[in-house]
Amino acid sequence: MKRFIIAMLLVLCMAFGAYGAESVTLSDAGGRIYDNQGNWIQYIITVTITTAADGSLTAKTINAADTGIIRGGPVGWCLDEVYVDPGATQPDADSTLTITQLGADLLGGNGSELIHNANTTTTHPACDGQPKRREVFTDLSLDVTGNTANSATMTIYLIFVRPN
Image (cartoon, rainbow, N blue to C red; front, side, top):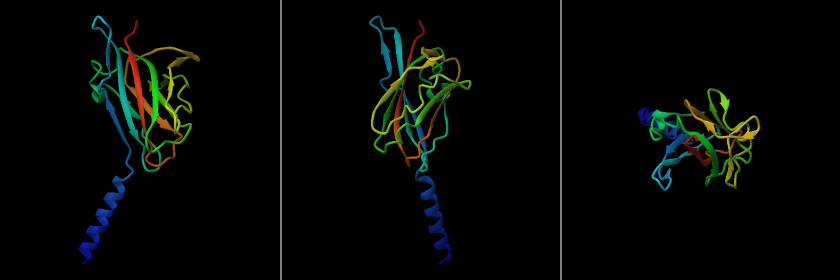
């Protein structure tokens, strides 16, 4: 009987530990856009996020090993635009999205309160308060803060273009 009770407790602990675990998935399905000469000019990475049961999310590194999709990762491309679409389990209104490279905020503060609980939002990278494409030359870090909604879901679309 003791073994049965211990086994049941272990099963319950494992079930509750797995429930509410955060997840981040990267995809490039349908994300390649070509010009009329067949040149690859735009690329979209879709990041699907489910926060932990307490609403938190561990920052996610986006690199060649994760994506393997932009010829060695997003390096050599420019981040042009970011869309955030709240999911079925809505995040808190006015949560913040940060995308950094070597610790520098590529959105230049434009990710502050970007994530809404009902509306799709968009922003452009910025430098010194001005919209500007930001070249990617190393790994990116994506982080969501200010959310406390349990197991919130959202989809983030990172749109990259070739440098001019």
